[in-house]
Image (cartoon, rainbow, N blue to C red):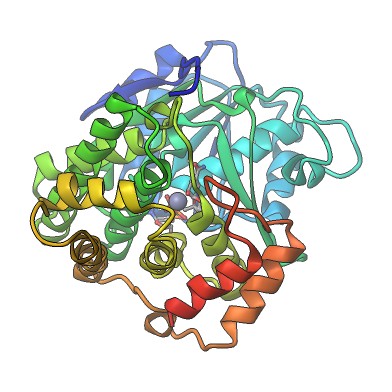
Length: 385
Ligand code: NZQ
Ligand code: ZN
């Protein structure tokens, strides 16, 4: 294990009715900008709960943040925030609203000519407005990490960026807010969280016993509660465990001191930027192919995954690895998710287009060993055909 320091500054308020507690988390004098998406929070009562909790405060709002939040939209949000002299952002929604709001928080402290430079890294993030979160979709873990992914529609680019100033100050996780999720979003959330764990776990052994065992517990939990949540929306226990697992999958804890991969995500982001594939669905297409193409480099961890996540202890090693990959794929399929490009109506032409975009974005040495070059990415995509 490499040396690390760990201190996640996001305070979690978990459980039914916790939205009422946000008033105590936001300074009384702060002018609050409530950010949200396409309106699901108005249909399911979350908006009303938030506004009730903020009664008597100076509150403005910015709605209409789309899935895969756009740079162009968030520049409009910045205009609203400046006009309203907002001093605190409250993001109410899923990963897209939270990520868009993280960009907004950084953009409001930026004085240069081109805020997109904050995303590409050309300009350094030096600070951010304080941000709180009311989460309505368990998936990304964005509610307690300091990363975000923003799409520049004009450039056809979907890029990830991050900075410690972007950790939310607090995040409300009330599983009841997820009751209104359509099955597609529940399935997406389970898969996204699952792949987050895999990106931090399926690398090479690094002696992180706690990190490994915790990652395996999260994977087993997601395998158990994902289908239950889909089958029975009233299953509160499954729903609560899904929300907690998705949060823990990407709050940084299982990544400390161990290598990380993220090649599946970087390839997936290009599929989303080019073809609008849902984030999680881009991952379920790429991950099984990635596991097959990279089986030699990941052999030790694949065997551990087969044994501890899928209970595969007997038989030849290669067979165990093969079955573990098939089980992973079958799990995604059982959630109604695509595992091949064709399942998402993508033609073979997508392969060179994604590879060209990876090159254009400097994504030429991905993975824990930087061995996923554009040539390897091409092999992975070919294996997903
Ligand atoms: O916009 P509204 O009307 O709210 O509807 C949303 C949206 O259409 C809907 N939804 C959310 N909560 C709901 C609900 N519908 C009914 N009831 C509720 N309770 O769900 C749809 C999808 O929302 P979105 O926020 O886009 O989904 P998700 O949370 O999966 O976020 C995906 C985004 O996060 C990025 C992805 O790339 C993508 O842009 N990611 C962010 C990460 C991070 N910051 O750490 C890591 C991830 O790997 C990921 O890349
Ligand atoms: Zn993800």
